[in-house]
Image (cartoon, rainbow, N blue to C red; front, side):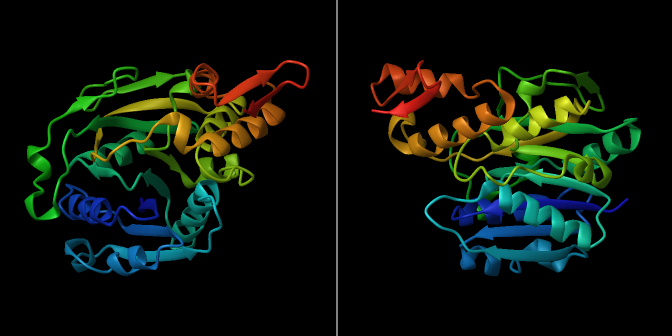
Length: 277
């Protein structure tokens, strides 16, 4: 089976390079590597540099024009289209911040081959506490904590789940057939938030469950975080409203309630809307 790794990027060039080093040193190389740049031509140029470009992996890039908000859903869909056009049977979506473990691709490939029926396959994401320069990167030496609220299967273990709310887009894999069945990410979402929640719920509605994959670990590289109340407010209010219109309930309540607590947004019960103050 042909496996494609798909990454979307805007900035984070060091993180992108580290990811490519990790892929080059994997137990199983990707057959296709697709980088979709959201208005970042330098990221496209960097895809052809480094050890991954010296392997048999076929590199494909796509440069999207962007406005004020990053088109995360559109970028993932464009990456999948590139991968499928290149002959991919399996799609692995990997956030630009993530360095794959040596066993990640092999574990995803094994899980996709073994799982009967459509499924979203999710690996463990572990968090690094400090920046990781590519010149010092040794994937075999990476050790860090997993997310405390998600399953942590052991090597070669597969855990089936119907808890769609645990799906996230940092690292996941699915077959080409499942991707086409789900018709990709909903492109009305632009900017941060809800597009992956929508994708996970749409999968749930169509009977596509989660499978947590042991050995498919990825290491999330450190980067500074910004305040919820100052960074993604407009995106989250807009995208949460789109989600509520499509599905009838509000996503990202932790974010929305924190906006309310900090006085930056409030819920208007008469209109059933979250609004900026």
